[in-house]
Image 1 (tube, protein in one colour):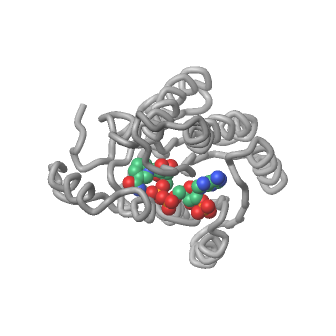
Image 2 (cartoon, rainbow, N blue to C red):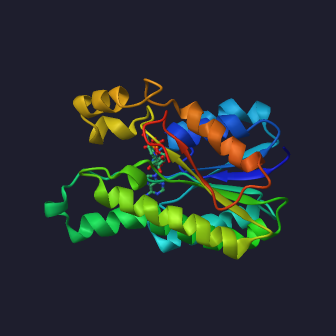
Length: 243
Ligand SMILES: NC(=O)c1ccc[n+]([C@@H]2O[C@H](COP(=O)([O-])OP(=O)(O)OC[C@H]3O[C@@H](n4cnc5c(N)ncnc54)[C@H](OP(=O)(O)O)[C@@H]3O)[C@@H](O)[C@H]2O)c1
């Protein structure tokens, strides 16, 4: 592809799989926050396949973290072709009756504010790119109503809405799309998904399994390569939720 690609949260899970999927022949910028060792190991693994691999560390829940990240990238490379806003997650489960201000604020900053701010900061670099695009990672939780994950689902819905608005505003130069993963096998669930919930999810998934990180990575690759798609969110959930 010969592209310059930034993936946030690239040290682990879906981000690392996306880095593996997109690496061959490209200039990769892998962002991490706490998983530096994983990011370093991934750089060693991908270096033989890529034009270049750079690591950038940042806490994307702060404005200064987002700004410093983009400044650092601008110092490394003159343009960006692909931004994958993957960093995010569910901080904890809270029922609607118990929602706290700090949980709501932290959840929205981690999942929505960070992706929107980073996209905004990257527009200059993307405008200098070739067929540039943004792919946001949202969630099935934004679509089907997820008990005890309402704040998380709503924060991903904000990114879904942002995807369409940004797609219109940044067209025709920059495409903006999203993938909405269903239940995907990553460390994400170790903390927040009990086994019986996991079982129920599989029972209600027509394809009869939870997703693998490569299922999502391939969907992201499809969106990067599809030059006539913008403002779209693609579900990757084994049929659990159909539109
Ligand atoms: N797994 C699922 O079933 C599922 C379903 C739908 C959507 N998703 C979404 O998919 C994305 C990736 O999740 P995953 O399942 O691959 O889990 P994961 O391995 O926990 O990945 C989350 C990534 O977000 C990064 N991150 C977290 N807090 C951050 C912060 N403050 N600043 C910068 N980066 C931060 C982490 O970086 P460090 O590790 O370096 O700190 C990590 O690489 C998330 O947006 C998640 O909401 C996952």
